[in-house]
Length: 239
Image 1 (cartoon, rainbow, N blue to C red):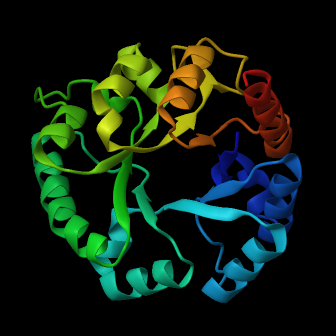
Image 2: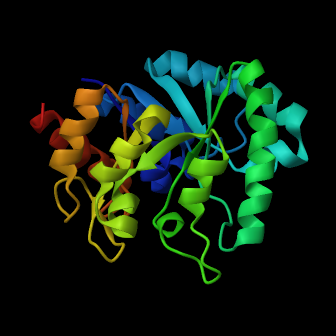
């Protein structure tokens, strides 16, 4: 089995020394990474780091703003680093008007990016499963009104609707990655195997369906690399 890491997990290191953080991630045995910013590195610098470490870029967490404000520049950078998966990590979706705006934008952008060989996807938090004050439910409308691919964060699905496997089943034809994460029902994250989310059951479902797994561990307690190590050791114990 191969596993990836969302580099937000080691943000305590990336903000200080991006290259050193990525090298340490590779040393733990992760095979691919998902970025959460590039810390002013050029495409050439980033590509050199991937080549040095032997890591693959599975995708990026990049906001919709970049595509809306500088489509050509954003596209050029992502093509230069060979990114095939542009994953929107979150977006204001707290009412019907915000959802309508998001739907219109992604429905316009998705085919344009697809023509360039890039998949546009969305990463959920818990709030997209919960009705807004006006009754709108963001995830329902994303499913029904867009063709967006999904990177399901299984922990936030657990917090938002209690049964992440039910949602994985429902969304399985759209899945490109799954975020493996653990924590308590009230939204406090933990390393894998140390919380209340059904991570063992999620692991088996994801493995059996052949979906690439990306670890995201959020608390940096005592530090991000230690959490990342605990997480990959947990995943290996499930093989």
